[in-house]
Image 1 (cartoon, rainbow, N blue to C red):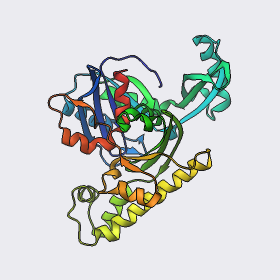
Image 2 (image 1 turned 135 degrees about the horizontal axis):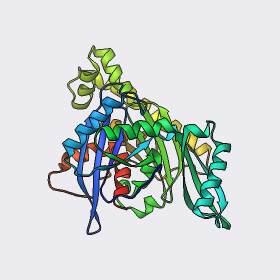
Image 3 (image 1 turned 180 degrees about the vertical axis):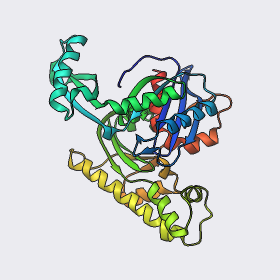
Image 4 (image 1 turned 90 degrees about the vertical axis):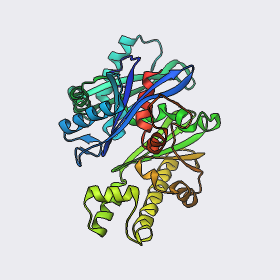
Length: 351
């Protein structure tokens, strides 16, 4: 959203707390195709709650991901966390020209942003006609601190990439809705909750009639499980993370450690949904899609469905896409639930 430029060859780069996820898409005869992709781990604490702490380390990880993927693209799209962005929908006269609207947006921003206007990047997007008012349009105003943009731009440049788009994570998820639902019209036109349980942050994004209507982000994630494994079994962070993924932990792990963490996930999801219900007229969503690294826990979708009573699936954005030669489908499907932000970003290159 911030600083959009058109690009016919673009990679989506999701910089999370633990890894860099790269994805390049194309459209061949109307079908989406994955041209290249890579997941590259980040050094511990180089990104803290989606804020880049070590630009050099992250830039080097991006460079490795580019090399590993084999992509020839040089332009990239990245996103900033929803919690780092102030958004507001305002109604404006439909008769305004682009330049007049931009001037008006600057005036509106000063009223809604609790920072100096000189310290933020501002952008806007016309969403459509205001309900019941043909002479008005709804405009999405978005602002974030300039440093959030600059850190990502610098990181891309260090890896030899040209920054083309800086988007907002919840809106990239909105963009990937068709991939997540497999093109199911009933779901796309219904109300779905996409819950991304990352390493340190969990986000709830509710889509209704293909549009983002609610988003919430809080500190909670799979790192808590890794740290409990470290504490209980005397392992290093790296060894605990590896054991969490591939197994080999002592008897009693599932009952004593994993089960309480699954209960905690269910409790957080239920709490997030209650926040949503209290702010809307909805009392139920049609389906929950689980994304992020913690969605790889075996049968976690069935567990959440049993606990909450809402149909729940694991997000699989690549279930109906073609693959370029050399792309490993098994690995891509395994990484898929953690690739929804990268997917939404990569789609900007095939619009």
